[in-house]
Image (cartoon, rainbow over all chains, first blue to last red; front, side):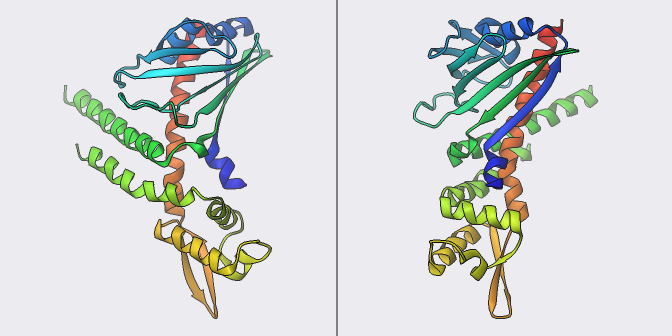
Length: 153
Length: 113
């Protein structure tokens, strides 16, 4: 179904000017993953295992994230499940459906092509999606305030 | 700032919409109207194991959520999507998508430095 696909998944592709082994380490090493993603993670990524962490991005509160690793094929493929936008502190998301995040690496002339697919959004509860929309608006309000401050100073 | 209150209005506006889409028959109806354009009730019922009455009931649920509307053309009712509402459903994915763009931008800086 056309609509189903349109709302169920996100696909991204980026070429990174770095060797495949370097990009793999940035994904597979929990500490490095957290460094660029904006999370403080405890423990190591291993297939079948879960790693917990806290979001460290400035516009988030005290939010705990759980990453359940499904697959790790050295330097080529990694996948995990999580609760997308589990960003409301004090809410137990554990009974809600998760999305699947898949990373695929491929060596190209310029370095490494990374493909990211996150799927399963159609099963995410309506209330959660609505919450994300609200957060999006709040984010924009914040941006506008920043701009206002910037031009006023 | 008033944008915060806009956000809350968005919640009350989109919640019934996702609830209306949380049914396979209704999702299939929306998918058909999305790919084939406006259709009569006869066309929507043709080849479906669901009765005409049931289809009409589902369409009314979708109409209440603001996802579809109908116009009378001759003796038939023609149903079509309300594109503005469908756009709101995509806003969520755009939001998540933007977050990925930001994260991948940070990854690029991280591995290329």
